Image (cartoon, rainbow, N blue to C red; front, side):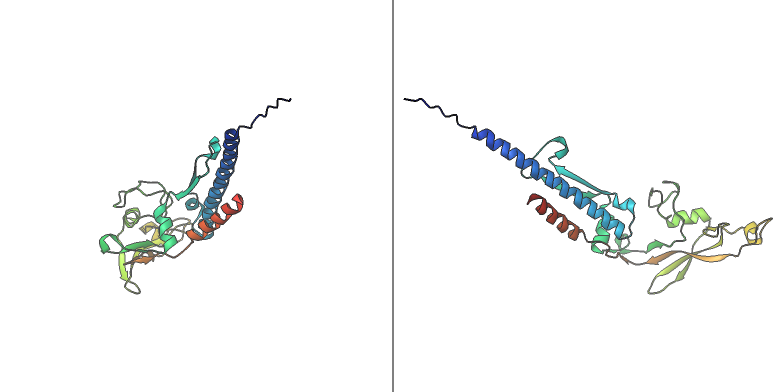
Length: 227
């Protein structure tokens, strides 16, 4: 009579390996879909003409971190912006009003010089990043002049300064006797009333991009990866 011994497989080990393989695939898919969503949102910003600098504020994170060889059957992906107020305003088309509803919003025109250094002037707005337009206080300090306020359309006000063209014909300078009368090698320059700011009671931010559409697209991409 034969004595047959049957070695049973380690079902617990098989189950553990299967779960690990599945967790690895699911976590990898979540990572790809999360990065895909971040890239979509960055493309939305650039496509809306908001610039690459703002688009780079989008960040992402996946839990657990697939790059550290950690897996889960229920991973989570998170995408956020480091400029949430700006993103929210242009994704919902919100209306912006002055603090406490009093006064005006000063909207700079293209004639307002950009800032060269942060914290260059004492301003009630505090330090502002390089590249943004100067605040009204900074403009008055730069040109050493006070605004000339005139009525605009639909209840708005217009803030002007009397300036002269720079030598490059692209920017403006404070009018001086030498600049107005001219000097050796340079022609005299006429004083122009230049619009610097438009003052309004409120401003409606235009609808520039659709965050939900990008999220839905990334969701469909995740499903395709899992399937």
